[in-house]
Image 1 (cartoon, rainbow, N blue to C red):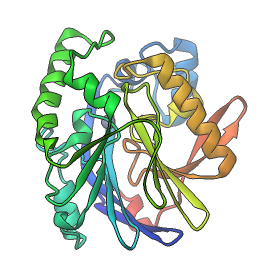
Image 2 (cartoon, helix red, strand yellow; image 1 turned 60 degrees about the vertical axis):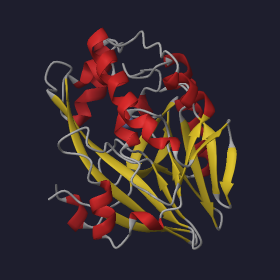
Image 3 (tube, rainbow, N blue to C red; image 1 turned 90 degrees about the vertical axis):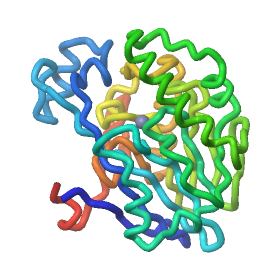
Length: 287
Ligand SMILES: [Zn+2]
């Protein structure tokens, strides 16, 4: 059974990883590591039990983060809404955990890809997005790495979701302190206005990384950008900066597309890094 939520503490904050469901991506190598040299890719995939030619699908969890600071309820990303059949379960899972969507007063949107935009189903929330991200998608977005087919699907999905956010939307620039202990950090590359969120309480830090890192192998090879990384050079710089910072400070990382609950740490390994998911109770480990 797919787990629905995972509660944990960060200092004085009560946090919960909330599943939005999952999605199966076909031809994962073409999506995640399209430019990786074959010999290095073969070596990187081996510990995961795959080869470049025998990895038919990548089953990606979609996991959002809820932080209760004691005075505010802050949600990081909104999942896929009605876009995909096996996702869009965020609100249902919040309600099952006793959280009414009306209690959430702040929603931080890491970026405007449709698997993070969901539906604006939080009537009392302010919605935070980077000015650069808003301008990119509301202009004529250039997506030269995507096939024309994928480009069309993506733009159509964004155009269906983004206008729903006109109520309560707040555009910010770069690093911004939103609340005590909740700060955005510009992390461009995956999209031009992509951001991560630094959450700190009582000296402990968690970095909600959005889509800066899509797969644990991107920690071992931060130079490999996904086909959906709009500006791959910036995406690599962002990944390296984020991973170096997290390894040096022992910050927790929260990764939206990783196996549920997407929580762990990174350790330096040679010139790059290695993912170490947090140990989970057996009830959550069974999929
Ligand atoms: Zn995503």
